Image (tube, rainbow, N blue to C red):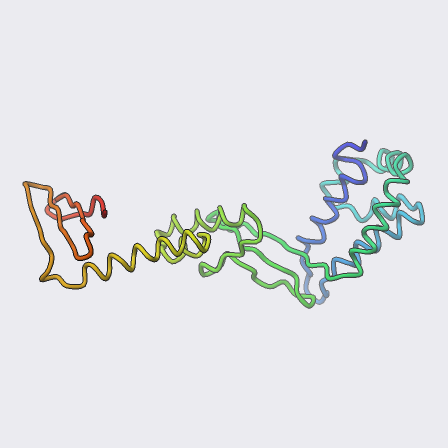
Length: 214
């Protein structure tokens, strides 16, 4: 078995490098499959130096070249099988993704398309929900902004339909103000709307606030 800093574990660093790298001025962004093919070629050629050069800075800092060479040689059969799988994967569509954390903690999702990074979610309440963590981040962002539309976008179809049905029910029941039945006792009140909807309110600082809708 390889440790987390071994060649197979270090492949995760390679994928992170492919997914998060950005092209500098005057350079085109390489396609992810080129890095996968380069790794597979290095494994087939038994070229540990070429494979090591493909690792990102963090992976190289955790495993020096000598240690990598030893692990590379000891696990070459496993790496060869992995290289075959990578070659097969590189023959299909390989999409690189990245996440950029902003100063306020929000996370912007990006995807590499046609050699250019494009926004996939996290901007203007457009969540990219490709992983469970993305849904949690989008829900947190919507709640922090007190954004009902943002919350609704994160909910499952069934849950969103239930919430929207309740909203529609309240809007329909409260449409005729003249038909409202209000009972007030001190700083509390109960308002009966149409369709059996009942709203409980409390007076705080001279203003009535909704406590519950049943």
